[in-house]
Length: 444
Image (cartoon, rainbow, N blue to C red; front, side, top):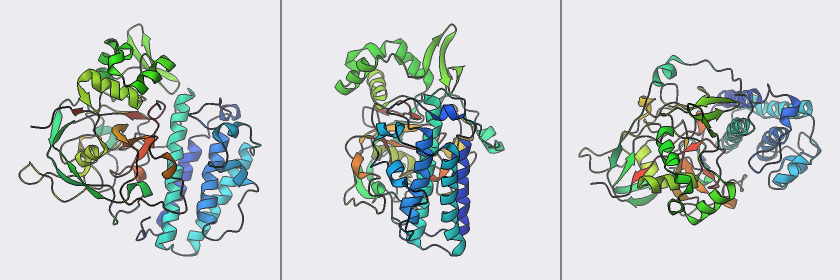
C-alpha cells in the first residue's frame, strides 16, 4: 500500500466514471445470448464477471469503509471469486442483465457519493485506486474474451489522436541494444503513486551485462519458426512445453490459419492477412521458449527487462546510473504518441512504431502493444507482506505463473508502468502476449 498516496476526490470520480464507461462499452453491443458463454477455463460468464466487478467495490471499499450490508442481497454467494469455484459460475442463479446493471449503478453511486462528501485519506485513496485498477483489468479480460469467443471487435467510442496516427508508421526494428551490467533496484519504491503488494519493494540485484532486442519478435519472424517445423521439433521444447504441445496438437499460434495467398490471423471475428512487422501475439510462454531455442536466443529475466525499460546509462555508456524511470520514456504519464494503450487502436501496430516511447537504451514499445513474457517465475520479493484488504491478489499464485511485463494495446494506461508485474500460467494463449529476446552470450 502507498500510504502517502493522495489523489483529489474529483480526479477519483473521473477515474471511476472512465473505468465504468469502458466496462459497459465492452458489453453493450452484445445480445443476451452472447452473454451466455461456453464453459471454458479461460473465460467467465459475462454476467458473472460484470457482477464481480461491482462486488469488488462493494466488499473491498464500501464494506471496509463502514457499510453494513452489500448492495445486492446474496452478492457474496454469487461473486466472491475465492468462494465460488470457476466452473460453478455457470450454474448460479445470477441476476438478469438489467438487474446486474442496476447493481453496478447502485455501487458506483455509493462509491462516488462518498467522494462527494469529503476528500479521501491516503488509506481510502488506496482502496479507490485498487478497485478502479481491478475494473481496468477486467476490461482487458472482456477484450480478449471477445477475441476468444470470435465476437466482433468492441465498438469503443474513442477518437484517434493525431499523435497516435503519426506514431503508427513503423515497420521492423531489428537488432539488439547493449545493456551494461551493474546493481539495479528491482521493484517499486515507496514514493510510487500506487503499488501492488508484489511490487514491494525495490531491492538491489546484480545484473551482468546483456544484449536485448530493440523490439518484440514479429509475426514475420515467427512464421519462419513455424515453417521450419518448430512446433514438431521435440528438441526445441522443454518437457512441460512439449507435453502442452502434444496434448493440444498446436502447430501454429492459436488464431493463425493458412490461406491461399499466405498466413491469415483471426482478429475478433474477421480474418486478416498476417502483418509481418507487427509483434506476434496470443502466444504462450512455451511457444516463446521454443522460438528462442530455435533462434539461438533466450527470454529476458524480469530484472533484465525492467532494467532495459527503466534504467539510464551513465556518462561513459558502460554503467547504469542510480535513477529509475517510472515509464520507459521518462516520468511523464502515458499518452498518445508514446505507447499503444487504452484500446485506442484496437490492435497491434508495427514494432517500429511509437519511437517517442523508447527507453533510454533504445528499446521500443516496452509499454503497450503486447504483454511480454519473461523467463522469471512469479515469486514474492524479499520481505514481501500481503496488503489488506485484498490479501488474495498475489499470494495464492506465487510459484505457479510466469511474470509478464509492459502492457498490451488493451491495457489501460493507469496500469502501464515499468514495475507492474502481470502473471499468468505459461500455457495461456488467449491473453494479449508476445515476447522479446536476449542474446545468449554476454554483452561485449
